[in-house]
Length: 175
Image (cartoon, rainbow, N blue to C red; front, side, top):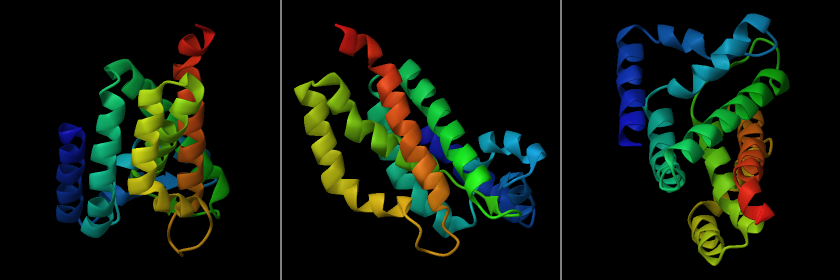
């Protein structure tokens, strides 16, 4: 996770050096050519404050998912990225450009919160309670509110986290 967050900081430094020209690779809502940007947008941010706000929760929540295994981390990241990106693409006003990893933060938060419901394992439930106590107030970000904040991407990421938890715990539930 340190490498992932570190790469984001290097990309932001490059973006600043290039006059924020990399921001063009954010999700352009309602543009078919903008769909591939679902995979570039999480790496980009609207400045240092935006990146700093995402870095700590992304690192912590991503690390908690990565502890479960690389496959879980990769699958959850992919599902969450797609769900968050599609929600930002389809749910934002035409011409809007969405950047940032906060959809993934919301996705991993939701993943960790609901995983215990699927597995019914005490450790997963305790982790969910701890994560909720630390980051639960962030969940208000899935609702419309602050101008310029992609609640659509946050909501999509959270939905993606629930989907990822359901898919990735399917074998455990069968047992």
